[in-house]
Length: 219
Image (cartoon, rainbow, N blue to C red; front, side, top):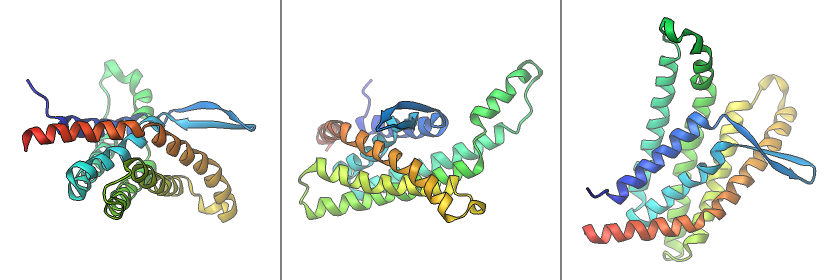
């Protein structure tokens, strides 16, 4: 049985979203640079892939199809948030009551964090589509590596800034304290995502070639 390549790419895109939402709370150490300890969410591996997948979709199938993919991702995050909220509030059976605290701790993401992720992902992804599409038009479809990375750098800056602000800003602490914390955490994380985007650039070329090959066969 043949698997449609576009269906597989969309499925992997949704997988990255689910992985990011359900497993992204785990923070791992990455090393020390100039005395600064770098830590990042395990989602650092999949977030750039999501934005690159959107760029691949624009390159092969156009801006409207990419926007549709982004909106499907937003719906998936919203449904995950609602379903997690519902199931963590259901009473467990007697046999599994001892596991309930651990289950709720893993899947009971706060509404604020989930909402911040939803808003940041949706706005940043749509921005990525817009920036990549504009560059594609102005550069006459040349320099895919440049268009992909510039759109990712811009969109992931807003993704990081929006999420960090909505999730961690504390009005009672004042603007100075909040900015110090948000910049200290947000800038290194954004730079790491930019680095991952550069590293994953060959996958964008591979994805475009792979989908175009399948598209030409079905045209």
